[in-house]
Length: 154
Image (cartoon, rainbow, N blue to C red; front, top):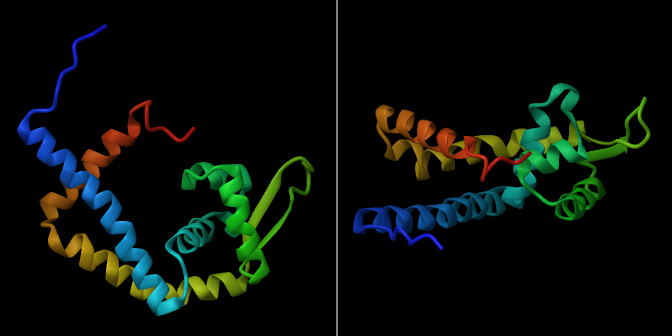
């Protein structure tokens, strides 16, 4: 068995700060969206992903992978969104085995109403606290981490 390379004090401090941020940032975004729009962050995020896809449509598999959700978790949230009329689930027109999910006009309107407050909150809790150089470093660091095989969604 290989010897463990323990974290040094600087790495430990960085790790704990990262963990705290990983939990605190989504909580702050969720609180704002629920307060202002009665919309959980997970639902907002899924609708935003759909809004940026061609035809506001993705396969269920694509959306689950992009959101890093299990198929059952996505299905549960999709049931709620569909009952509210914000998405429509349907079969692919040429491949009946493929399930599609489309953001409806009503869902897009909900997203458009929530977006300004959400962007203000993202700026307040993250980007307004960083210099442009730090934003570039932030982007590079997380792109590097996400490119690693251990974190790939596919």
